[in-house]
Image (cartoon, rainbow, N blue to C red; front, side, top):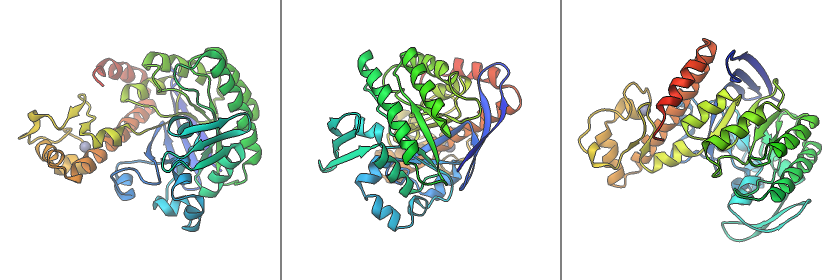
Length: 369
Ligand SMILES: [Zn+2]
């Protein structure tokens, strides 16, 4: 089981510096978790991932459940061995993908039945099976099954989803059978303050190891996201880690840290990297652009990643334009390193009590992402 140590709280904001201790190592927070969708972070090896500074990785239960299946992962020694990642891992419950990727065939208070997006096979998931599957996969942190209502859902639908999320969280806690793992609950409720308060309140009563905020970054926009996060973090206990799911752009992360978030995950560094989009301190670079044909400078001056210390922008552009895999690999490495450098700067600014001024300056600069 993991424990969370709150090391420092910012005097001028809700930002926190902490350390999450798990059986597979410690995670310095605020932390960014790269997404290893089906047991692999797309485009790079675990060794390269380690070199980007990642301390914890996320894997999607939904994808692993459909392919190769829990029996195979378990038979091959569990998720850490399967992924060749000996550091901390978090698995989500599969709920988000069930609601966003698959064809739902039935949903009620018991659980969800859906058709696999791969072959249409019918799969059933409820609180007990989602927890049992994660118990067997063996990640250090596992998530309760939740219902994530679609963006634009009406109040009645959001209310049903939030109430179901609470009932399912209670069942997940009762079903949780692997004491080595921490179980986090997910607060739902869209951008409705009263629903977030209800959901957070009920979940906190059940006393989980950590709390996630779900159902955001689905189209509500930065300001609404931030309002909801600011409102919700105030309802969560100080001494437990807080995880904002699926967020986000660098500006979203800085603003959410200021609102009291400790953990993040997002596919943007790798997805954008595969699409020739590089994050840099000076704004985004689109490497397919002709302006980079003969450019000798690195993607980002001063970046210590393998891409920036060995390749010019012109070479990276050429790899993309000639269909070489190396382009996508190099930009995935750079973007993941960019995110880890961002988190390290956030942690350092918190340690030296400079976070608020630093965050104000950064958020003014970030306009174009
Ligand atoms: Zn770099």
